[in-house]
Length: 482
Image 1: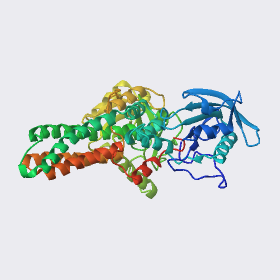
Image 2: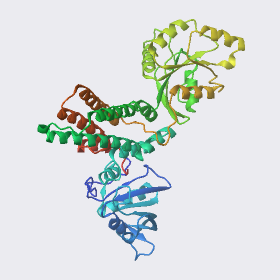
Image 3: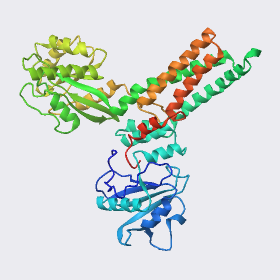
Image 4: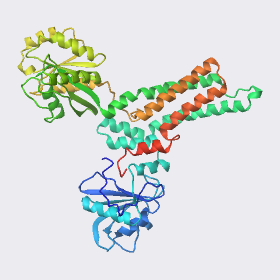
């Protein structure tokens, strides 16, 4: 769902929106027609405005009189008392709601026309249209969640695999925030003692035990470094592990890609050089997202366009984490040394899986000959037939193993946000300066400054330290209605 998922409202009735005190409304379900749609209203006037357009079965009753966590059947009525739809209204009372404000969620039929009509009626009666992420921003401002938890809401919505879902859920539940708040509080306790020393500088007293502070600083440095290092895994789980399918022309790269994607994504042809550009798509294998990249076949050619495609193949090898090197079992090329040199040079440090394709056309003794040709190769070897779907499960197992991603446990804290990684890196630099300062006997005022800087960067992650520009940038990436 993106920022433009809201049905269009004419300028004549658009009331602005964005003020923290305004009562806001938006469609919270994906755009288009469906069985139902949910329209969310939040703010101090959520109940009174809803009562103007939502009539309970007993017209004497009002939503404003109902308790929180209750659902009520009724009809949506327009200004002429005409029925627009039959619907359900769920009431949430402040502060026990997602935003911390009074909230009403109207579940109506999923007609785009009905959704449009209800939004217009709400705006006419005093609501403002919500900005992207405004409901979650209000939850943050009202103390329902910190900033890292708010960002995890967007990650949870965008999660497409078990691993990315669990990672976002752990962060949204406050696992990451808890770790950071613990570190920040320990630093605060020490910096308070150091700054107290500064008030008694003429008396040469020492309230903060420097040895204990050094032990604490080293422990915090280890923890921050561990969290920062987890970003590589977290980012991979979030966007997918890049896997390059490489080899000579006509070895079956496109056939394998189509098999893995379970759709005809790439053109398959007996003509050499058919694939001239990279084709990418993602697949979930055992809860891990792999981003497969089909590349142009590597060979010597005088075709300018094909050579451009081959150069892109080399680039994709360098950008990938795993390389699937496909070899046609039926005709191992005499250019194998030439090919090995070009692939190995660019795949240095990558996990390479050698995939022998078309084994359905091979005798057992021929497999032994091929094994001898590649006896210098130290990586994994898989024998498959992409066309006949033979041993492809073994290939998937090899990919999962090569990913080196362990399954995420409920209590695991993994960083998957680039903003958090940058802040952690800066916090790590600051706490490292604290350790160096303690070793060299630096004065308390400089020590305090470095500790404060570390606390500042940790606070940036949770939102204890923030500014409107940062908040606006974060929440602008949310979809409308969240």
